[in-house]
Length: 72
Image (cartoon, rainbow, N blue to C red; front, top):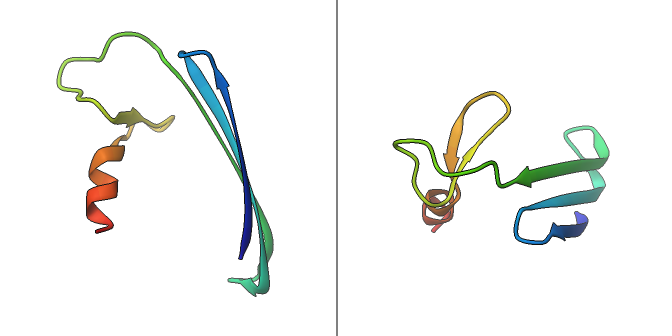
């Protein structure tokens, strides 16, 4: 896999990340994949949220800090 990532910051209020990948040999039938992640600061944390929490468009909360600990 060869990947290229470009992150564009919008001051301290948001970012956009574009990840383009090519696979040789193809991975699960894919030769190319592209993912775009956009995030913005939407205000103060809701009750029960903690630093590192991200709420997806589907309403799921994921904590980035916990993800990095799980990978170790």
